[in-house]
Structures are given as C-alpha cells and as structure tokens.
Picture 1: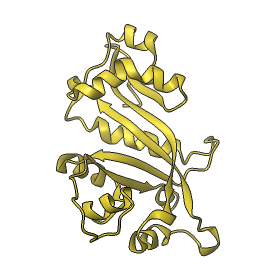
Picture 2 (picture 1 turned 120 degrees about the vertical axis):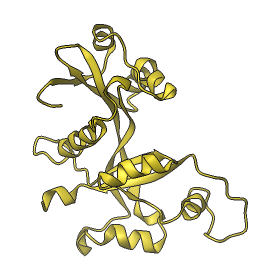
Picture 3 (picture 1 turned 180 degrees about the horizontal axis):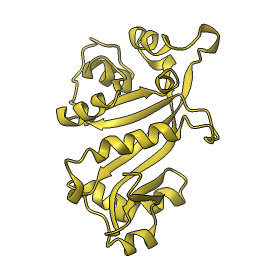
Length: 200
C-alpha cells in the first residue's frame, strides 16, 4: 500500500479529485464524506487517507484523536493485566492513548488486507522518533460483532474488559453481578500496547 499510494490528510480537495469515498458501512461512508470536516474543525479528531496514485481512488481512511486509558477505573484483574508491562515506578492512574475513531476500506478494495495495513501505519506512526507526544496505547471502540473482533485480535488488540457484563457494569457505575438489566453493548473497548513494537 505504501509503495502505490499517497498518504494525506482527508479534505474536500482530495475527496473531489478521487470522486468521493465509499465503503460497505453507510454510516462510516457518511462520516468520511461529510462529518470528518466538522470533527477536524472542532479539534475532536483528524482524518487521513491513502490515495491510489494511478486510479486516484481513496483505498482506505482513518480518524485519530487523543485519548487515555483510565486504569484506576478498571476492575483489579484488568488493571493488573494492563500494568504488567509497565515498571512499578512508572505506573499511573491513567495512560496516554490514541483513539482510532473510524477506520474503513473502500468497497472496491475489500479482501486485500488493507485494514491490516492501515493499523500497521497507525501503530508505526505513534512509535516513530518523530512523533511529538507520548502514546502508550491504541484504543478502539469496536463494533460488537465477531468478525470485527477477529480483525482487531488478529492485529494484536485485546479486550479492555474480560466480559461484556464487566464492561457494561463499569460504564454504568455498577459492580459486576449487581442486580440490574444489562443491555447488549453496541461496541466493545479494545486496546493495543505499543511497547510491544519496541521489543520486537
């Protein structure tokens, strides 16, 4: 992908030159063709894309924003797992992270593992020496679907919470097992520890 594409910020000029962008998800297509600009203007997230140079098509796009992992709000077992790779003297109540808010591959380039390459680019971007901020984790709010989970797990992501019930309870300020009606979650939080790339 990097050999045949130009990496650039998503903007109106790029969309016009490439004839727009379309993926299989209607809401994500809407985001990358209309809503991305307001997110950028409001300083809530910046969108980037890869443009296939010969055909002038956007093959994939993603949005990133600053975020954090609140270790102090996690259940003990998950907090311990998160802290395991962090030296004792560096452990904090929260850790810097980047949120991948949206990620999509053009419907014309499905099945070519472009999504894997997009995640590889994001991972490399936040560990390279020119990155100007500390960022320990990449987090995603993954759609609650086994195919989506498989994609992120294949790329090294782990669930922030061990069960959907545990995640629901934490998000709603309840204790796990406390009697209440647990609604199915639309998304599940997942994370990737960037320090793993430093040790490879």
